[in-house]
Amino acid sequence: MNTGVKRQSNMKIITFNANGIRSAAKKGFFEWLKTENADVVCLQETKAQEHQLQDALFRPDGYHCYYYDARCRKGYSGVAIYSKQKPNHIITGLGWSVADDEGRYIQADFTNISVASLYLPSGTSGDHRQVLKYEFLDQLTEVLKKFDREQRRIILCGDWNIAHKQIDLKNWRANQNKTGFLPEERAWMDHLFGPLGYIDAFREVDKNPDRYTWWSNRANARANNVGWRIDYQVVSQGLRQSVKESRIYTEQLFSDHAPLIVEYAAFW
Image (cartoon, rainbow, N blue to C red):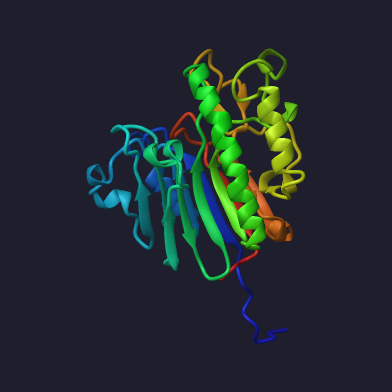
């Protein structure tokens, strides 16, 4: 029976660490993106300045495109958001040096929702960077609390550079003392998905093991699926029931990361 009411389709959001957007483009990322028909695309590690991305390829048809580049040096970090609907407002940076000088945060505000692309520091290049990573997490905690006070409905997409639980990486025993799976980092994630009240959208709908978004380029890690799940879509508590489907796209290799795709009940 035709009720005359148009069924509203899901809202599809993709997050992807490109490890160089120009490199990912050469590997077919933008051709694949056309087939996905996503509403919002969040990118991390663009590794380019916007003036280097003048080719129309980097502004896909049908999208409003926003880049936030690293100011500290060229060819480093950088985030972006593509959106079919024009945002009401774009926010870049978080207000502290590592986030802003290194181009690690961009947020698109719409009428009913905010979507952000976030790239957390990794800590792999030395103890000083691990200290910066902990400081970043402490400062991010205050931002997340502010979002909660404002009752902001937000989806924080990106490479968080932390595997939360044992199920989130293949060789967890061997990595307990390595950045990305340190007890302090995992405790922060416990706090994020506990007292802070945020939700791991992927795990809301997929509880299965061997679901990874990043693989080392060494020792055939990807071929053997020896990976880590460090890319997330983290949503505010009020969006929990909106998460409908999730998948990790692994059929093609665009980067050492794979795109994470989540579908939500439509917000607009």
